[in-house]
Image (cartoon, rainbow, N blue to C red; front, side):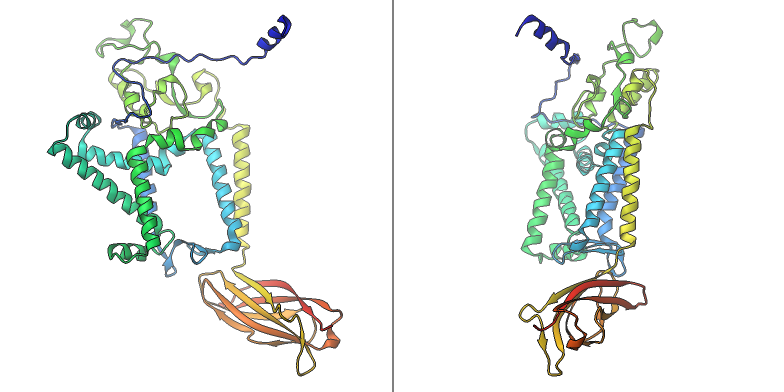
Length: 479
């Protein structure tokens, strides 16, 4: 490689931004094997998170108990191959609706991430919600973060033994409740709780409950931030949705640097001009559930929970400084540039969400809650009966996809003067399949060819409705 080529190569290299990591006195840097003792903090964002967590958990715990039309309102019955969501019953042939829901949820997550960053992780992610619930048990039983740390460093005595035993017992019981509730979404909730407490549950249900109990206990009790740092895929690709106008928890380095302790009684105007507003108290590190220092810049480990914002605002209040040293801000905001909340990416996501929501609603509204499958007799395509007519044998499977017992009327068209052998008016129970063997006979002079197109028609007659479904089939002549 000659000198000119080296110059050209250096000209296209991407400039690297050096980030200075400040060493903080008395605070050890986080190691993957370290245990994080999350310090309790109060403030606007923590109250908001706690209330959202409470609503989320209440929704999760109570929804399987809700009844609708005499049935469990939400039940994903895998064994019966049907999903019930209030008045809507979905079957394997309705998997497109579930696909729509998952795609819609994904785009909603993209939209929220592009606008508000990783707030899903900080406020609504089950891992975060359950982790903070487990930390609540710790605080009530073992005390504050410093007390918990001191307790862990002590040798085993009676005080440590009963506190640890009570804490882990509460964790296991809460994990068991979580697992039973989760299984209640896939099996009738009342039966799950009754069978568990009477020791009458099946081996399959018992195994699933034990597995999810262990998973909840391990994830929320022991792994905690490890799930967010090393196992969650969302943390790895979220940055692809960020831009300079995405709201994230940010440290205002322009205002905060240089850091340094100072007396609270001293007037800020009398301080050394080199000192910023950050007093280097490290509370933002101590309250962080993932153990990061937000002052080192945006990091993928940050879950946007706002704990450091509340902690810093509390310190600023005590120091008589303005709030917002750590705040929800955009990159443009920190640089003093104009923030564009309404931009092409967000508008694009919003349009896609609107279109997909509209299509999903239309598909649900236009969905016909009855299915008809036609199975021909494979042994003999056609036969001549004792009247000299050509007869074809079919087995009709009528699936009532609604949650009410319905009466249907069956007919066939496509060939003139057909004779129907079998029931034409049937009653199908809610969410059930009715198997109906029938045969159709036709005068051979009515048949134009060996294979003739016909259409089976099913209409709901009771309760009276305009529901109607057509299904094409074939009628074969005798060779």
